[in-house]
Image (cartoon, rainbow, N blue to C red):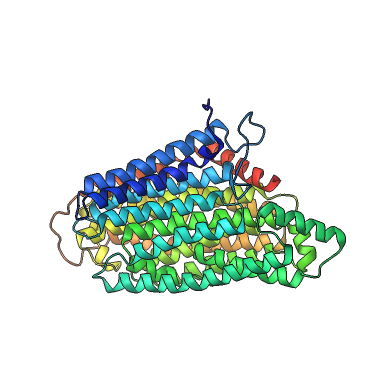
Length: 512
């Protein structure tokens, strides 16, 4: 696909379009502060996120960020502080898709709520931070991008001012977020103290020089810094042990925001973890200096996170909390992408993790949007409250079944193939630790089938506790749910090209 001649800064167009849309929303709000024109506000947010998506897709097929493509290749901006490659564009696509779906669904969900212009502006600003995280190439820009994504997210969770759960969830999210930011910043300062650099490739070069000189004097400092950095990423991806905020924030916040945080925010957290640990800390060199292979930390994190998340989800009676804990389990699946890296590569397993995050963006967003639809109807939050909903809303409940079975990994849905590639990638590494990870993936997927199918059973088989009148069919929520379900299925024939793009993007990062 041809690409017109553009200045280098235009490579950040997907993120710039998101922030420009947020500014337009602020201007609309400034002109008419009491405006509740949902068509204008939601429409502006959707158009902006779709424009960002269109540009990111255009760039990725045009070869931007792909080494060897004439005139394009990997684009570095601001002396390498930001980098636009195939992996950055891949995750910008995930963020833009989820932002568009959430904006469409919020059209109905926010009906009657205050602060509508502020709501959409904060969604777009958080999305800007997440898109910037995908391109961040320095520990400083990573930290700033994380804060840019986190601060609007705290406000979004607690935007339902009259809802105690929303305020409480936002407060807990903020407090744990502040703690993890402090830990991560301290880790960054330790890494800077050990290497004298903040840019990822400069850190790697310094570590190689120290290893060549046999100088491991700051190995302990470096190891502690890496451990603290992992803590910061664990918060952003809702991984153990920084996962406690997720059930409270997801349950208390507006359901579309729960979908936004559990899909787009999680994907953004993983992209910086992928970039930092593949670029800044070469496994062999870093292992020599700190005395331990850092992938071991991700092996443990992956197994513990998927197990804790799935076992906790299986014990829930609240649907929203079940989805919150299951999202922690899926963070464990995505961590396999880092656990399976080796000195010689790991493109397949990291590409599989990226693919899982893309599929997860559709199926998990769709599942939370169904909860938003149930809240719109005034249905309660327990499994029992969902009994018999299929009699009144068969289309939405059919979509819910697709989401649940795909999240569980039932063939031939998208979630099955992404887990299959994760399993194959883990097995291909061939180490005992990765065989354990592969076994944990299978066991946890089997466990997840219990609680996902429990929800499908409730809506399709169980008798309703109370007789309901006809349920409304809000246009925005229905459109977003049906689109997410269609994409979860339609991705199947497109899995070949998606696999190629994800593995190619992982290869570029690992080769850098």
